[in-house]
Length: 128
Image 1 (tube, rainbow, N blue to C red):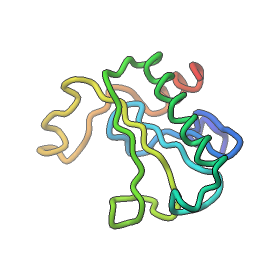
Image 2 (cartoon, one colour):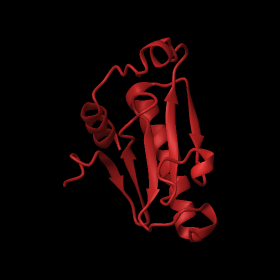
Image 3 (tube, rainbow, N blue to C red):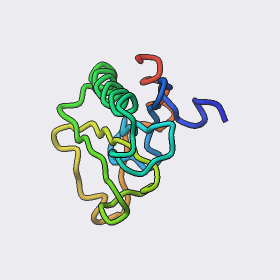
Image 4 (tube, rainbow, N blue to C red):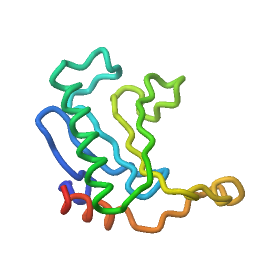
């Protein structure tokens, strides 16, 4: 599978940036270490630094492409914390806009996104 099919926006030395397959908002990105580890304390200093650097670059790129008003950033460490893929550490970058939450997740059990994942991925990869 190529990067476009895999929704990978950017590959670094020790980490990569990928679209979240089940995004909270359009442009929801994950920064993942290439190495398969579960916890921040298991990363090397170089891996931690690159994850931080890619997170900042992702925020800059998202601001350029989709003009969010803010961001939610975070890592869920362990299954009990809500980590969907607990055995592979990843940083969430969720762009936020005023009024981006509505009734659909509560009533309709679904999230409405204004853009297809492939289009968002292509826009972010081009702007990277």
